[in-house]
Amino acid sequence: MSDHRIAPVAAHEPPYYAVVFTSLRTEGDDGEGPGYGPTAQRMGELVKEVPGFLGEDSAQTPGGLSVTVAYFRDLAGIEEWRQNAEHREAKEYGRAHWYERYSLHIARVEHSHSFQRAETNVTKGG
Amino acid sequence: MSDHRIAPVAAHEPPYYAVVFTSLRTEGDDGEGPGYGPTAQRMGELVKEVPGFLGEDSAQTPGGLSVTVAYFRDLAGIEEWRQNAEHREAKEYGRAHWYERYSLHIARVEHSHSFQRAETNVTKGG
Image (spheres, rainbow over the protein chains, first blue to last red):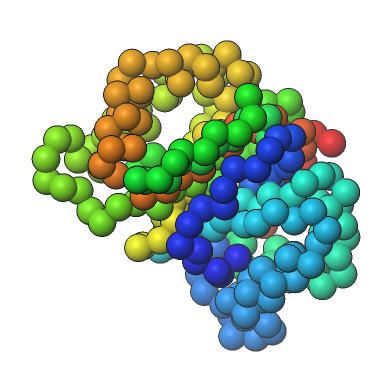
């Protein structure tokens, strides 16, 4: 989640799934318990172990919204990640301490394509 | 797109659609033609006129990725927006001038929920 990639996750062959997490943070950590940054980094590593995980894009406007999109091959991977004990604990802590608001969307990707400057554009799906 | 909302778009009743646009910009505007900022702002206004448009969340890490998620009630709205002449012109210009890379995902939302601190949590969908 804190991994600022230099390139968006490329389009895969549909169907697959996108988990969109859009959040607004509270005013900083409260200085107790686990910090947001280290926890987000740990989660970003942990999710890579989930079967069918395809990648994750994240952006944060300073003082504003964060949008993270994680891609999975199927719902089974999303369910496994949802039930991961360490992830559940982090989410519970996050609701209590870090998040003012958030929205979560689980969506089935039906079409996707990627563009890359000055190289071949790749189009997948329909 | 440049509208930094103070709250994420809330969950709607599925099914509906999410258009996820993840991009990496080139190094600044080239000083010619339309600017990125004004164009993004114009597109953000124009998309609101599309029937079935439900809202848009956007975040940008300075010097890094931008992630924009627009929500539509159905594919017809997405298609109308895709074919909008002014939008097409902006996209074409963007590929030529503004974007190093991008990925676009059109995905059918099957589950969504929203969380809001210290108020009733809303859960929709399944």
